[in-house]
Length: 79
Picture 1 (spheres, rainbow, N blue to C red):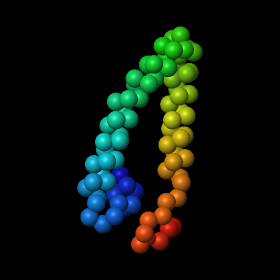
Picture 2: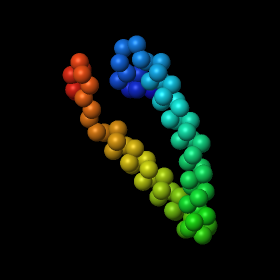
Picture 3: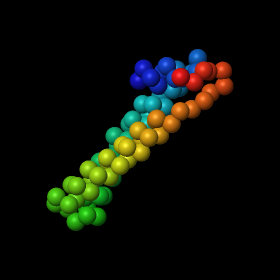
């Protein structure tokens, strides 16, 4: 949360916090459904569990890669 608010432009901290919490809520709502879908499509059991875990791992890794991409904003020095 602190990094999100620190990266927000001055005066937009409330909006940044709201967007971050909305994204978190959507992720916590959608993730169980995605895992259940993977479990069913893989035929259930251990294969379904593995498919669900691999899917969530891939989505998490993709999110991490997106966060690591540097961005530039006018008026801010890139660090």
